[in-house]
Amino acid sequence: MKTTTLAAERRAKLGAAMNAGGLDVVVAYGNGWQGDYLMYASDFPILEGGGLAVCTPDGSCRLYLDSASEIDRATAETEGVEVRFSRQLGRDVVADLKARGKVRVAAAPLAFVPFALVENAPVPIADGTALFDELLMYKTPAEVERVKRAAQTADEAYVVFRQAAQEGRRQYEVVAEVEGWLRAHGVADNFMLIGSGGTDIRSVTPPSNRKLATGDLVITELTPSIEGYFAQICRTLVVGKASVPQQRAFAVFVEALEAGVAAVRPGALASDVARAENDAFRRHGLAKFVSSAYTRVRGHGLGLFADSKPHILEEVDIELKPGMTFVVHPNTYHPDVGYIMLGDSVVVTPDGCEVFTSTPRVLFDGAA
Image (cartoon, rainbow, N blue to C red; front, side, top):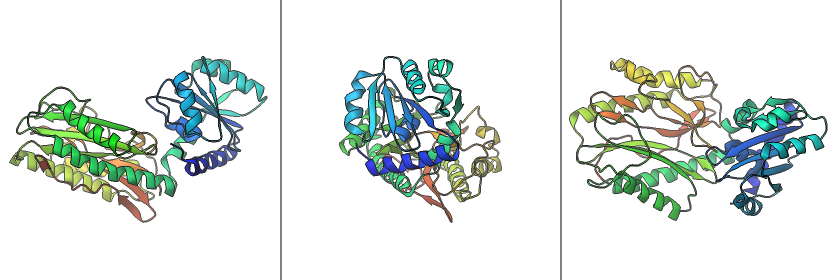
């Protein structure tokens, strides 16, 4: 996967941010779980082991990888990057920095960088996490276009999910069908969780061998990536016909999602979006179910990672600006019916927001 133009665009933005911050070198870490900082710096979507990218403002990048199996792939899939195998990432990057002399260095995310690097670096290493977070959150039009395409793919994959969610099928069989469809359509990565049942559902998890039964709520978050950029859809269906309590409960979630999306605009804060969602539940006497005891976030950033900043919470005062992409999802537990999921991917525009997700905000009955 060579995205040369997009990679050059990202490196130019990184170089400008480094110059503005008075930095000579940045070091970006990534691993097979979270590789967005490393991907931004090096254009390499790491799958195994760990990696450190050492970058300068002029766009040069040296990529250290500790998995031998990743070396050939990195060499083939990146351009303008010097790839090196490293048995000890921290030690080898310390040697790299020593060879550069007295330089101003920042690392991101600093908390994940190998301790050997921080402890033995020849110069102090500043925390470059905020610098990268700014770059990751506020995207260029080309990046936004990838997220939009990923959201369209998520819509299509949810149709497959609905068709697969039949009575008697096991959770892992449903997820396997979606994964197979995505791979057949060129999607290299997808983060997906599922849940099924009634008031016993407390959240989504990796798929189990639990069978779907008539009357079950079936919830999912489905998060495919296009050229490294993720978008997410959250939806709920019922095996068979939805009951009146299920329909009544779902209506609160529609109200909350609509309120959250309406709050998305330049100059607003992430906390404003979360508060708009939460207030819908408060109006219906469900205030305790927007607490951390029942739900994690009211949405989160999307891009080179499936769950990034900003986290949509009432205590997060990150300002929304054009180019920011995230999912708005008032997912939580409802005491009458169980956990319900509903969420759309959006982008902040100069005039407000654009919703990328096109799947209707309805409680689906049965299979498509």
